[in-house]
Length: 126
Image (cartoon, rainbow, N blue to C red; front, top):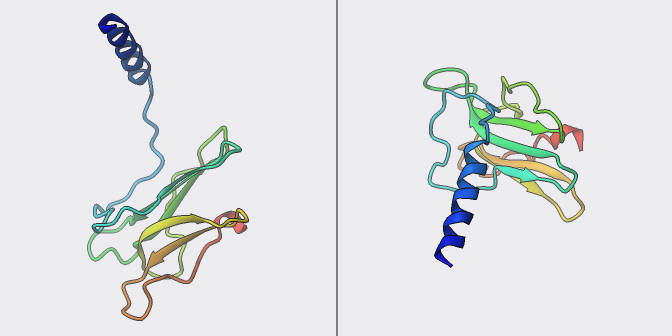
């Protein structure tokens, strides 16, 4: 039994070691969680993958900060995102899919009266 477990472990390690990392985004903003853990990755049944992160290409005070969105169409990733999807500064996005399959992003804008950003940027116009 120990030999089978060891063989299984070695097989898994060999498979994982062949996986190649893929760069899907860049940001200068390093506080990705803000003590939260929202859903930032969606894998759809048709093979599409969506990834969101708090992004900025500027330095402090990160005036361009917002949701940077990346997607995989089943074959290729899009070009690296270079701007936020929102019209104003936000942070800490969550990807949401409704029961009918509509996809959108929720993020906060830091305002006391608006913890949910404008239910914005339906992914790819959906």
